[in-house]
Length: 270
Image (cartoon, rainbow, N blue to C red; front, side):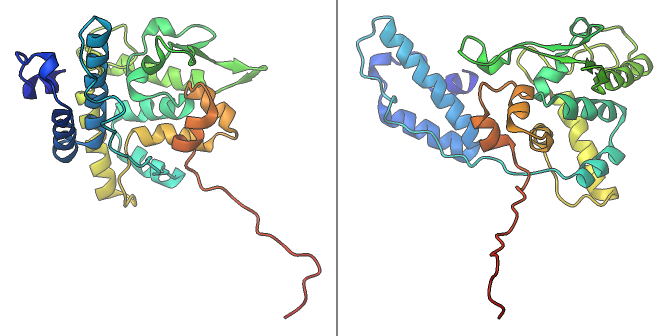
């Protein structure tokens, strides 16, 4: 809404809004910011006009089924074990305890940085329903246990190391699992994570400079690595809290598939 208000005249009557304005705005954001932002803003605009019609405004919807989204290729970067090891060499104390939790849970950054101490019980770690699926069918809250069928899942050991980091790092107590030294959460009410992002970029630059890592990767690529490395798409979908395996397979299962070559029996010798 902030971007929309900075461009469109708030005094313009909704009945005067034309389709070409939507096209112009979409293309401007696409070329000057990013295609993803253009598509997100297009969704907001479309929803606004749908609500206007619902509330009795007699207009022709200026964008629905007319203005299409910018095509965006699915990201396919797969992070190898060696690349991840290089990054861990260059990480600060926060990232050294954050990354193992990221890999174990497969959750997105905002969910991990919003974990509260109250989400950790004697039996495991709870995650709420994902923001994207709230109010929609599909998608559930999830619980990751410390033990399964009498065996440790390794999650408790990861949490214990994070708690040791908190004891050494925090100067002020905080009910978030991850926080700044002054007890401030690393994600604000708008979902922004600038403090964490800066630490990630510094670690990545250091890894490129001082280790064998040659190609940068993003924090979100670790979510895809977890989804790619687990044995089945069904398990990956549950970790990522997807309603089905369709999105998991299309976007997150990036590891090259091993295919056994065809062997013709009794083939003639050349």
